[in-house]
Image 1: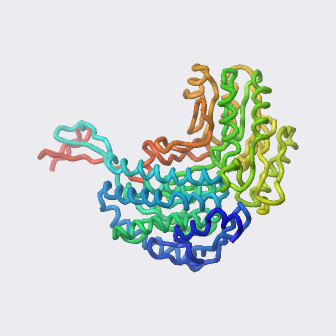
Image 2: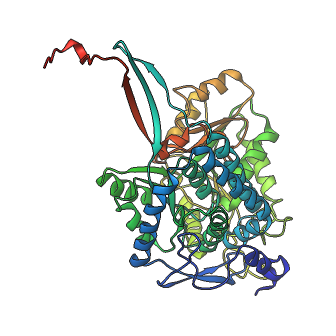
Image 3: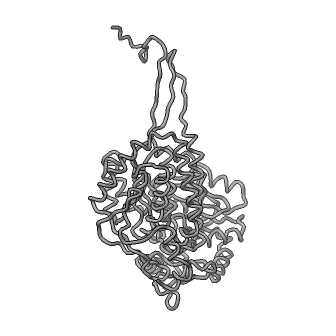
Amino acid sequence: MSKIAADFGIHDALKALGIKDINEGTSTGTHQFSSGEIISSYSPVDGSLIAKVKSTTEADYEKVMSTATVAFKDWRTKPAPQRGEIVRQFGEKLRELKEPLGKLVSYEMGKSYQEGLGEVQEMIDICDFAVGLSRQLHGLTMHSERPGHRMYEQYHPLGVVGIISAFNFPVAVWAWNTALAWICGDVCVWKPSEKTPLCGVACQNIAAEVFKANNLPEGISCLINGDYKIGELMTQDKRIPLVSATGSIRMGKIVAQAVAARLGKSLLELGGNNAIIVTPDADLKMTVIGAVFGAVGTAGQRCTSTRRLIIHESMYDKVKDAVVAAYQQLRIGNPLDENNHVGPLIDTDAVAQYNKALEKVVDEGGKLIVEGGVLEGEGYESGCYVKPAIAEAENNFEIVQHETFAPVLYLLKYSGDVENAIAIQNGVVQGLSSAIMTNNLREAERFLSAWGSDCGIANVNIGTSGAEIGGAFGGEKETGGGRESGSDAWKVYMRRQTNTINYTTELPLAQGIKFDL
């Protein structure tokens, strides 16, 4: 074990989370089995091998699906508040294991330890939300046009929900989906990113312990591991009525087409190209905090990371100088050390994409005002640490239109009124998160209006990154249109049914049609 892993208690964290040997990787609950190829999980923090899991084969997958479909028949019969009680217990286990799971998230993915703990807290929060929701899965009642009739609607479980998650939030996004799916009466089959398989094993171990303690059947929570080929089994499987997929736009389009071809449902959370508009009435201090954290938090690997800063020409130099000065204070290094602000990228492939973006923006006529680069030497042996970079650019640059999953921030200038800034912000194919910094009420309301931001998330005087559990999370356009977490996002995990009850001795037909026998 590496010195960093030893110093920060990674071995003890793995032990607490029940991660023991190479055979883990596919699970239907209490039973873990795998017979596929080995997936080795290396930490981007120091390049060390953490552990190995075995990937799922088609035969393994069939066993998982068979177990899940049987479990659904039992789980759907439990009253929703009883299902909520199981989710409550799961949340309590997460509270007990918050520290070791947060450490694993940080060490396997590379985000700061504070962010790792925050991600586990999001899991706890969605469990709390789901527990309350388990007593509120309500439909509507409607007045019938026919005398002696009553109409209402209700929601029923869908069945097996497939979840495909990305490396950047290796545990929280699964919990957003599965906590709601469970209280809705669904069972879940989860394929985590092959870049963070141990986080998946850890979560499955925690869930399995809770279900076993309550004498519930295997299959309510299932884990499969592997690359895109395992994901394809899910997207093409008619036994899975809903596939929730988080990842790139390219991946999402493939998933959407495959699921739609069998008339299934898909919930897509795809790329973001998020902007903060800075108007002449913006608070400079708040702007700098929001922009810097949004751009460099999680090393720019959030779907809500700030990619573009759209600044009014009258404020441009002042904002640019303040943001550049803030970047000089950033500390880059081991994310488990809470003194550091920025950790590593997930792997060297991500570093290559970062380098290409910096080359591309210069080739297109942009100017690097905070130059990037890959860090080398002691503490940077993994080759995954890079310097957050800032470039002056134009919105129509090809690279600016593209989402680079790295800490690269583009400064864009606008003139005139806020409509011009909104047009720049909306002038990309993605539509996830957006923000405006202003103390002008009219500008704020214009930004939030139907002809303002076209994103699923629109904030005033806070940044683009971060989301509260109570609100529905998701975006428009090529971000996919999906919604997870709060509000009425639960409805996607259920099927709607309209019911009409006739309590008379007559059977009137619609539109006065006569059909006497």
